[in-house]
Length: 115
Image 1 (cartoon, helix red, strand yellow):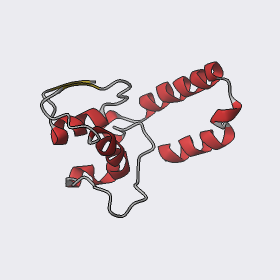
Image 2 (cartoon, rainbow, N blue to C red; image 1 turned 120 degrees about the vertical axis):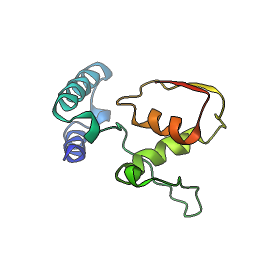
Image 3 (tube, rainbow, N blue to C red; image 1 turned 180 degrees about the vertical axis):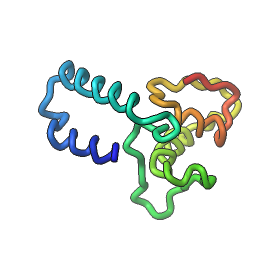
């Protein structure tokens, strides 16, 4: 349901038609409203996800609890695996509801992660 709302909003208010300030204000309102409506356990990722076009692309092995968030996790996996961050200190900026940070900490295992 939430994804349908976001798709509707992006169709009604295409990003290229808005100046940055009003667009930021609208999306800030939508974010605050949706975080009050949807509990943390039901919504842990705030990205549109990623699906590679190449069938040969490396895909993360997911646990059963991760399957509903497959495309969101694939985005974090793709970006975080461009550089080997194991045993490094990592800062994730704009972590939203921290679903990606949890995935990175659990599966890629940096030394320390701040989100």
